[in-house]
Image (cartoon, rainbow, N blue to C red; front, side):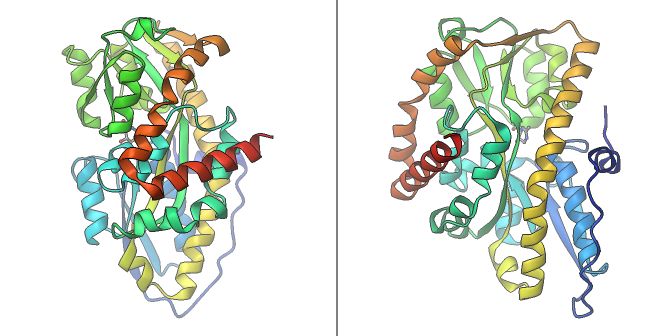
Length: 340
Ligand code: 6CS
């Protein structure tokens, strides 16, 4: 099912904002690279961002979306935004090779069980605007604008997995970062990396037996058609960073910077509501169109995975160094405060 962003906006009762008209802004087009196809959370974000930017600049700024596949593979998108060939992009699991600290978002069991709380913590000034988070991106020619959780990461599998023993030997595809490979190795699985666009055929051909995605992506990319189980362990959310090219951002007028930052801040709640609705709706579609088994792990079953995930935090610190360690400590502290 493909959603139109206008339908979502209307359904959620999102306010139509008046335009903060400026006559001084030069006409310009910003290219925005998405890691996902039309109808995804990233696409909905991009479409609304484009609408608001156009409104707020009285039509001076046009944002052109490049859904997944149009620029190349995932790392081609990051190369394009680093070089300034495109101005804006999303970066998630594969971004670990470009911004190692971003693998923080691949750690399991570090956030609360409440998605909205996590979204707020990740977009708080204390975290998002911290010198360490900004520096991690800016040192790589990028500028982070928002953190976008897109839903719980759900295991699509051919067999039921409720314990780490059940995972033994299962060839599961992870996004390309060492933290994810270490995590799934700790769970007893056999992790392997594969480009997003190759997962469906990888599953069909038996090169991989499982794959980890938010529900909407299991549906949108048709992965559920070639899997027998969807297992909810609520071990992590899928998290992407919305970012710009650093020099491009630095070169914007103060007025445009403020508009961009305001729009990104407004979209935090908007995209949270969209992702929740999109994931719920897509789960219904999956249930209607298949006899896939839906499994929700109990608190006790989750605990066995949580315990195995904790030592991987040390791997993160060893790999990423002091800045990564400070960011992990900061996030854990903010999560603890928010949870209490
Ligand atoms: O698994 C992946 O590679 C991709 N999954 C999603 C839901 N978004 C982008 C990411 O690259």
